Amino acid sequence: GLRKTGSCERAAVLYLKSRALFPSVANTLNAAVCLAKVEREDEALELYQELVGRMRDQLQADELAAIGPEMQRLRSLLGTVDVAGDVGATLVIDGRSRGTLPLAGPIPIRPGAHDVRVLKEGFEVWSTAVDAKVGQVTALRATLKPLGASGRLVVTGPTGGELLVDGAPLGQLPFDGVLGPGPHVVQVVAGDSGSALQPIVVAAGQRTALSPPIGPLGGRLELVTEPHTAALIIDGVAVWSGRWRGRLPVGKQRIEAEEEGYHRAVQELVVDVTDEARRITLTLERDESHPRWAAAAPSGAFFVEALGGPALAPSLGSSAEATCSEVACEAGVPLGYTFGLRGGYELPIRLSFELEGGFFAMNRSLSRSTPLTVPTGADPLAVIYTFDDALRLRGGFVMGGVGYRLPVAGPFAVRAHALLGLMFLRARDAATGT
Image (cartoon, rainbow, N blue to C red; front, side, top):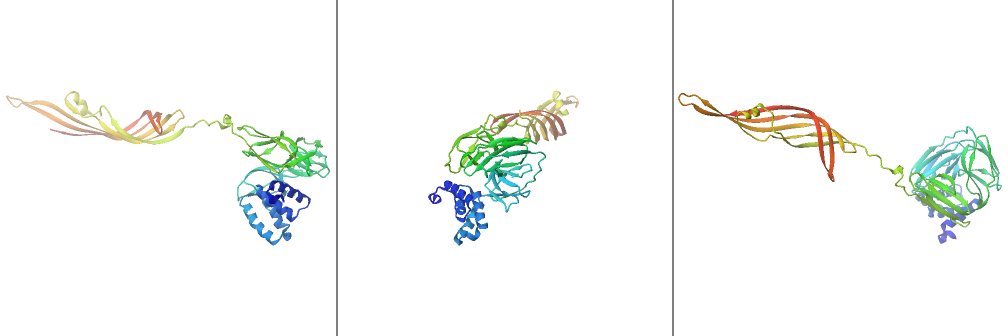
């Protein structure tokens, strides 16, 4: 049939409709094969689990042998969620009912973000977001709180029609039951007919009555937003974030997705009664001008760097140098070196507060000569005394102050510093003379 011709989307719809009337090995197996081919692996795995569970005795040996490897392949593509909670509560994932607690086992879900809800009449809705990973089990404990206050919801329509509240089946029509106060989304589904999504607000202690218009429904839709945190709006009705699955009335439908910091995504759909199942992704483009994406104000940064270089000075300030004003001197240029470490904190404006410490050394050679006349009788003797000084200055230093960094090119920069500090120096004059 349709499966063999490759029309798996349409075939899956028909096989699932057949299962709704009377589940059999044939329609269940065919539906599972088709769902796997149209990237609905989680639903396919559920059907295979039903086949090897409730329908195992009806399977042929070759069918059973083929199902095992296929289930293993599907599991390798999926994650699972295991939800524990109140007996009789309904588990809803992305707007689709996935069973009643306690679960027979973990529920397979596709990788990515999902909206998980647990509902039970007379209790507040429990919900959370799950980011499923391939091969991982996400364990959840749903603790339901009794409704402190409640309103009453009365819905009339096709007898036996299913009432969906916030995506979960709540009962059959006519319906008369309690519901938590606040906003809800209601839909009636009766076979291939149903209502549009309808927002309501239930007030505590009050009765809300509905009789929504019923018309033909189109094919199954799966709506996905990217990013998954974006709010999804269907024909003006806000549902939940990330993903929605269900059926909509035949006709024009406006699908929107929005999130702060993104441009709104809008898509116009024409839903037809003959529509096959469709998966539609609404991708939002980032609004780069939005304050959400404004670059954070740059902060300062700590730094540590090595320093070193030559040292120059006009004088070492020694007493030997002071005598040069009285005697002849030949003096070399004072030369030395310094090395150490500098650390500090630089502000975004490139002004820095700094501390540095290290070692300082300076050398200078000095040759002094002074003539003297020594009386030796009739002819005095002229004598010249010569002194050679090897001046050395050594010691450590500690300084603090401010600096400024001026970038030049690439990683290179010029730094200016204004520092005050202490130097712990020892002076030595190794003097010789003739």
